[in-house]
Length: 176
Image 1: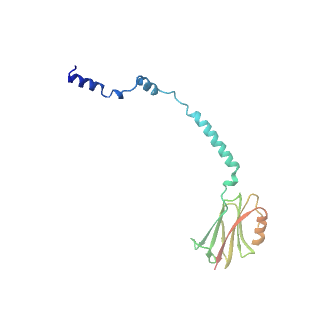
Image 2: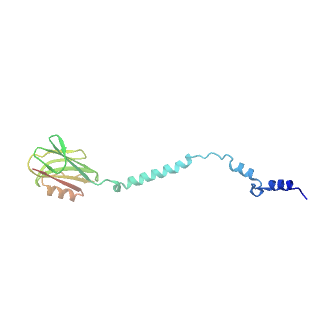
Image 3: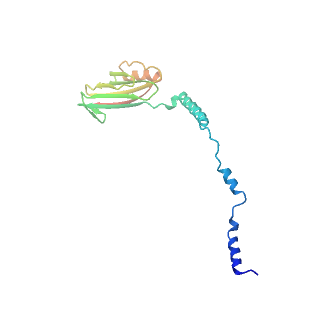
């Protein structure tokens, strides 16, 4: 028989033996942590840049879908200060700007339906003095092809522009 001390020592020595790592674990850890060859990151960048170029070309060719719609910005200046609203008094100045649209742009300002006050082409602001009492109509137009020159009649000028493929937006100003 063995003494109590020997049994205790043997039990302590065997304690945790079921938790020992498997044979060859050191070799597997060293193999997994070995340095890997450097990857050439720029080889991944080449296809990404090519894909981005294709996307830009496709969007550029479909350009019509990305255009902003025609917008008209109108501001009334009374005694040097910009005021809100669509009413003014004689002597005030109106500034109108067309943006967006299909390419060609114009702003036409009429007093009543038969008096063209000013016609401006392009995207620059169009200014006019509201000289007398009445209703003024500010028209912003856009078209792919050149817009016709206005003749002085709001209805006739709009009809000519629309028959040429133009689109428009209007805003009325009451001068009292």
